[in-house]
Figure 1 (cartoon, rainbow, N blue to C red):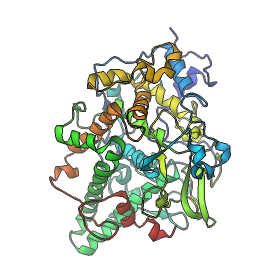
Figure 2: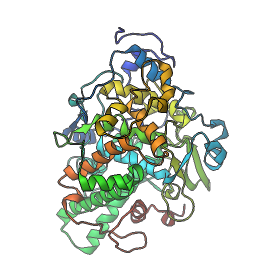
Figure 3: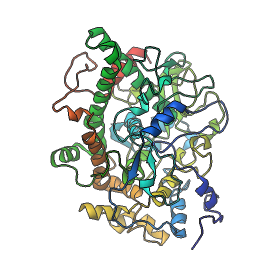
Figure 4: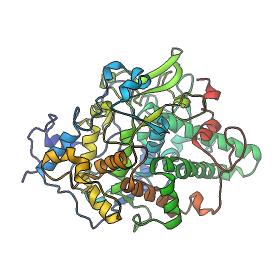
Length: 526
C-alpha cells in the first residue's frame, strides 16, 4: 500500500507529494486566492479574517453512516487524476484558438459544450456568490483524509452576507466609510470597483470575491445596493441614526434571501422540489449543530456550477475602447499583466467592470446563457493559472481538484446516497466511461461526477437531478429555516423594495436589485 509521501509521477506530470502539499481549496467557490507575481493581487484583509474566524462553525456529514471511498487506494488516486486531466473525458475540448468572441457568438462552437436555455450566464456567478456566503474551507489538505468535524467553516452557515458585511462597522471598519452606515466603494475609472489598497489588493469581507471580474462585480453591486437602501431609509426618516445601519442590513439580507429562495434555487433544482421541501420538510439535512455545513454539499453537490462556466464572457458592451470587452474566463497567458486579457480578478483597469445585461435578462435581447449541467467542463478550467490556486502549486485542473476532495472528505458514492434517498439510481451503463478504470467507479461513482451525470441524463442538464437537487435544496432551505434572523422568521414577509418599474409588488429579482443598486444597463449606458 503506497505511503502518503509517494513521489511517483502522475499522468499529468505532478507527483503525489505535490498534491499533498497543495492547498485545501480552489477557485470558483472553493477557496481563497493568492497572487504569485505580476501586477494583480488578491484580497487579504486581516480584520475581516479575524472576524471570519471568530464566527466559524464546523463541517459535518449529511450521511454519516454510508460507506466511503478508500483513502489509501493508489488506483483510485490515479483514476481521479486521469478523469480530470486536460483533454480527458470531462474536457469539453473548446476551440480556444477561435478566441473569446466566437466562443460566444458562433453556435457551432458550442456543440460539445451546449448552452442551457433555461438559465442566464449570471446564474453561475450568483451561485458562486451564495457559496462564498455559506462555506469557506481554508484548512483541509487536498487529497488527504480529514475529519469534517475537525475542520472549521470560516463562514457562518447562514445567508447573512457576512462576505459583504464582515463583522460589521465596529469589528471590520476597513469595509465601511466614515459614517459607519455605508460600505466603502471605489471606482475603476468609469464605473465602480471594490475598495483596494495602495498595492491594488482588494479590501473585502471574503478574499474570494475578487477571483474574477463577474464576482467582484457582484460584490460591488451588493455594496451599492446596501448604500442605496441606507439612502432610502434616511430619506424616509424611519429610523434613528444609531439603527440606520442595522435596518438597512436587514432589508438587504432579506431581499437577497428572497432572491435565493424564489429565483435562484428554483432555477437550479426546479420549483417542484423547492415546493416539496417547503411543504413536506427536509428529510436528510438535519444537522446537530446550528452552523454545521455538510461536506456532501460543500465538497461535491454544490460544485455543479463548475459545469456551467462558459469558456469566455462578454463583461460589458463598450468598456474596451468603446467596444465590448470579451475575454476567456481564465488564460494562463495573462499572468503578470496589469490589465489581463482574461476575466481574472485582482486588477483595476477601466474596462474591468460588468455590464449586467449579458448576465441577467433586462429584456433588451442581450442576455447570454450559461452551460448545461453535465460531465463536460469548459476547457480553460483544466489549466488554471497558478495565481488562481491558493498554494500556487499543481494540480491546475479544477476537475482533478474536485475529485481529490472526495478523498479529503471521504465522501460516499452517488449510488449509495441515491439508495438511501430511495430515488432512481444511475445504472452502471449510464457511467460506462468510468468502467475502464477497473475499480468499480461505474457502480460507486464519485458524488460530484454522479451529480453532474444524473443532471445530464435525468434533467437534460437544465437542472440538478434527484440526488444533487435534494442535497442542494435541503441545505439552502435548511440554512434559511434554521437562521432566527432570516426572512422566514418573519412569517408572511414579502419584499418591500420596488421592482425595476418603481412599483412595490411583493416580489424582488436580481434585475430589481441591480437596478436599485444603480448598476443596471440603463443607468450606466453600457
